[in-house]
Structure formats: structure tokens, C-alpha cells
Amino acid sequence: MTSRNQPSETAADFQISRRKLIAGAAAATAVAGLQPTLLNAQEKLKMTPQAFVYTEVAISVPFENAPWEKINEAIREQPGFLNKTWLHGHSTQSVGGFYAFDSIDNARKFVTEYFPTEPRSFGVAHNTRVFDAAVVKDASVDLGAVHFGEAADQKPGAFVYTELQFSKPFKEFNWQERNKDLKQVSGLQNKVWLSGLQTHTLGGFDAFETVEQALDFAINQFPQTAANVGCAFYTRVFDASVTARASREMNSPYYTA
Image 1 (tube, rainbow, N blue to C red):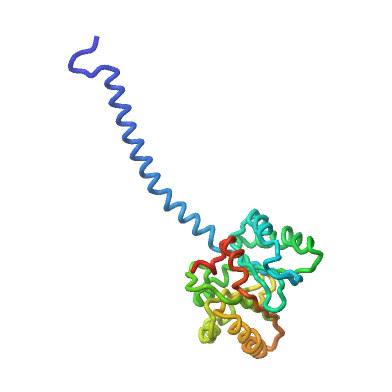
Image 2 (image 1 turned 90 degrees about the vertical axis):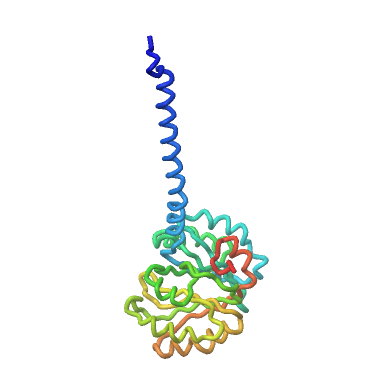
């Protein structure tokens, strides 16, 4: 028989259960408070590129006729894919892309396994490059590169891809001096420096306000840079306006403005 001064077994159990419930709720609240922070950290890590990929397909077609929606679906499924900026050649109407990946291994896998199937379906040749994103981060951030968290202040009018037939490890390259000159280039919005995987070629992917300014850089200014180094070079100019919608659907950081 239970004494009046002692709670019944049922009441005692209720008090214990209530304390456990309160403690559990407090713990759940604490965990819930941590979850957004953990998720944000994971998302930030995920979206920091470790490799860039450049592609161009030897085909000439108006961009609206390219099957970009179907291709977007397939690319989203590729391991490590972060984002893509579609490219459409000025005058040439070639089709290509500039991609960010979460690792060099996934970027290499993309260019050796998946991507060759795209141009093969059209019966044409193609061009691919893989670049180490980590080694160029500081130099790119100094020029407002949107792939490393810098905000896109305005939509680009054109893109310029450049690559020197010149091998130099990026850590040995005096990018600080070169950036001083690039900051004076008319119409240059931002730049991603490129350092070829295994080849150590130097290059860049640059966003310009207008096609005219991009052409001036590619045709008149960059050739002099290559001449100063004494090497051959590769340049391409792309119209950024016609690929805006397709690029937005692939989380391109250039179209957030």
C-alpha cells in the first residue's frame, strides 16, 4: 500500500517521463539549431570548385536549335558536377561549355567517359580541357571570379577563352603583376585563371560587358601578351546573351544579377 506522503508509482513514472520529455525536447532544439549551420558548411564546401572543364564541339548551329534541355538533364546526373555556363561561338556558332566540378577525378571522368558521347551522337569532333581550380583561386578572386563566391554585379555580354602554348606551374607565375594590367582592360567584368591539369598551360575564362570589348581583347590585346612570352595561343569569343536561359538552369554563377 502506498503512503500518502509518497507519490504513487504511476505519478512517479509520469514525473520521470516528463523530465525525459523536456530534456529530449531541449536536445532536439539544440540539434535543430545546429543543422542549418552544418548544412550551410556542407553546401559551401560542395560549391567550391576543385576543377574546371572547358569543352567545344566542332558543330555550327543556332543555339535555339541545340538540344540543350536534354543535355542539361544528362549533365546534372554526372558525379561531382557543380555548374555549367553554356557557350555559343561568336560568328562560328560552335557549341560548348565551361564547367565546375567538386574534384579533379570527377572532372577527368567527365571528359573521358560521358562527354565524348555528346559529339559522337552528332558525328563530329570535339575539344576538352581540364584545369586545377584550387591553385588559381587567389588569383581569380583578385579579379572578381564568380566561381569563388564573388557576386555577379551584372550579366555578361560575352565570354573569352584564352590559352597559351606555354607550360609554367601556376605557383611560379607572377599573377599579381598580370592582374594589375588586366584590371585596366576595358569591359572586363571578372576572370577565372586557368592552369592546365598535367600540362600547366596558362589561360583564362573572362566575362566582358559587350561582344565588341571581348573581340578587342581577343584580337588586339591578347596576341601581344602571347608575343611577349614568345608562344602560340588559342582564343575563342562567345556570345553570352543567347545562352543565358540554358546556363541559369545549370546554376551558372554568371547570371545571378
